[in-house]
Length: 146
Image (cartoon, rainbow, N blue to C red; front, side):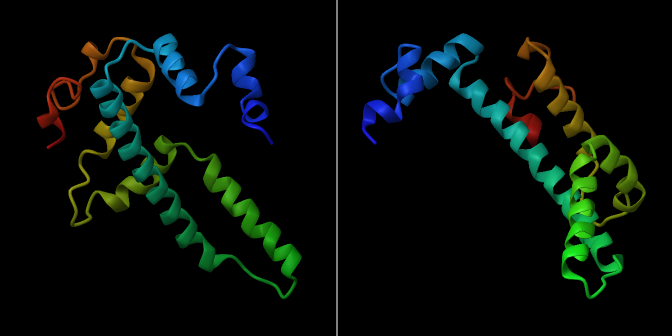
């Protein structure tokens, strides 16, 4: 495969390299600075990490109570259904179910709901100047994550 073939779709829209495409897409979709993009990425990353942890809690809690038969194909379907059910849960649903358990953990998890709200603000608010986390704007005050 030639480099030309590898970039055939980029070429259709007038780009020669992926780097050109990424730069132009950034210009088209956002007027955020590189620092703003970084903060946005960190917020999404923190939220995703918590969401993955929640899914692991659900899976590892339910897996041992699944009744396994000696029929490997049928058991695989049951575990697949379990995984799909867990994947279909929203962050809010998982948080609501787990909160009575999590609120007494010895770790500081008091910010989970605020992080969820922050993630939603970042995902749905066009003006980052209006983003608020613990009374501060994380795009303008790095200390707000402390």
